[in-house]
Length: 345
Ligand SMILES: [Fe+2]
Image (cartoon, rainbow, N blue to C red; front, top):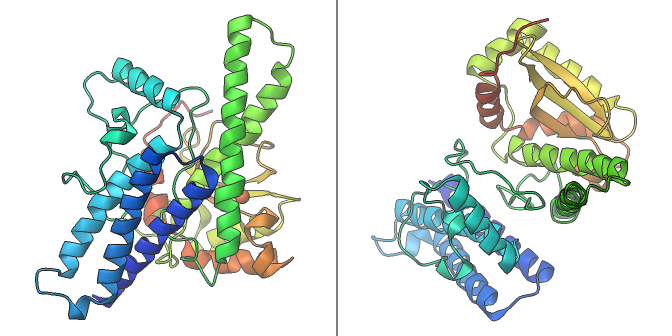
């Protein structure tokens, strides 16, 4: 009971941090501010009620608050996506989606004005739960957006500090998204004009920023304040089968991460061709990639991910990182990825 109330408080803080971020990042018009203000009120109110549950009237119970938080969460995620697009892009997006998915009723087709923080109940997911993606839609060229962190910036302390998380997610990941969008748009222009004089440059930008965007998008939900321990189920069996034991896997993964030359990643992958797991490393992240492989678990060992707390002790950071790995998310990626089967060679 107390744990759930604490999660609600963390969630409330997460929402207010996002609103601060948006206010700093975006030119705020009246319409946007009106929505931000309403969401801010909702986050603050639920956080305040969670902190004084014992003093509330009987009808304001924890399940009621969680249901309310789920509702706000769902609407806020939709709002975040729309808020990151320009008005013109929102209209284009609505048209694209209607053409590609005429039968769907995705909220992405809504305009900002239709997103009401205190509106009608919608299907929801509790902020700390990770559910499979319910609807897919293509991301048009140049329309990538920064995914929200699934927890507050300080939620992974003491293992990863708040300041690092804030810079890492809001500044660095955002830059990958922005530069990936630029590269995609430039390549659209090149396809339209037939002028490929700069194609090598934009292909490099596409690889560097696309890899950065996608790997960070995996990295954030691969961690959780409730993380750590060992995986269970089929992923645990596959690790046992291929690496011999979880300990042996963990040791190789840690060693591989610590010994990446320069900035890069350690990545647990499923090989659809070999039908087994593997640990790969990426120097920077556009080099040494196995393009046939699908990342399942990625550990960011760029200095910006740990330097403020750990300085040059990357091994300490890697060791501590195991305490926040969110295995159910890794398991979900594994379940999806392992459906792929190609002829083995
Ligand atoms: Fe990073």
